[in-house]
Image (cartoon, rainbow, N blue to C red; front, side, top):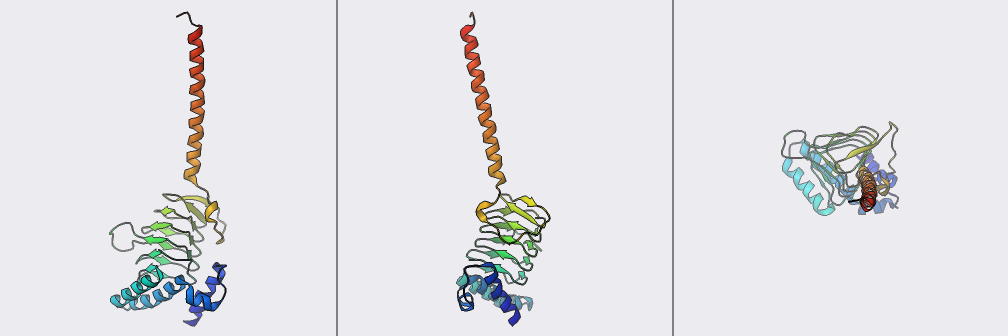
Length: 222
């Protein structure tokens, strides 16, 4: 147990350059508090003491702003940065060394039964405000860009952005957790820019044809 607690603290120092001392991390990091509360709630959940488990999870939600269903399965060295507004559903399965940022939802798409929440593989990173919905799998070393809505499986070693989420990088190389949220490729914006260029070219051609038509009319005998 103490080894696991130490891992939880050390991953904060690995992922957050603002972390300074153990005392500060233990007392002020809501993501860490939410993970520790979840471990307790999950223990009672596995013992089928569902009411106690839900009470603990809701108390944690009240104090941290992070809602983790006690049924969710979370691996080692899980890091929640800032954390406010994070929601993790009952049938979520999260691997080791996973990082999520504020406003992330790992949720379902409806009232289906059984496995209805995502599976997040090892070393994945999910950026601010991303929504990963349904019984899908986010592959190892994958990155989900800020504000993305992901509804389909994401291959390993991929970067996904947009609404709905699109794979924009997949090269088979392990991706380090150095995601810069403001420098992600934007396939929607790229497509809109391409369409705007086509519209400008068509306008230019129409204007040229109009001028030629006007000259022909002026020189006609009609």
